[in-house]
Image (tube, rainbow, N blue to C red; front, side):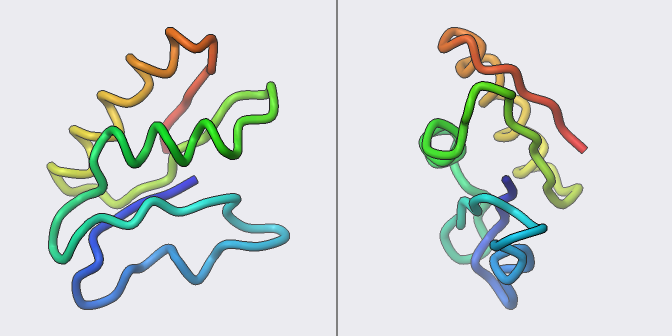
Length: 82
């Protein structure tokens, strides 16, 4: 899964589909998706084999995608980031 702001271009939204992303968490305009958005999207696509986060390297994305696995581990969902 991925996520980013909905500013100029919601970069990763176009990559959902076979051979690509399973889901995308869009943030508000020029705002990273919240941990709640990331967690909710992760719960929807989790199929017992964990969740891989792909996101842009800005401080908001990094912070929120780093917080989310701390909460998802309580649901026994393994997460990794690229």
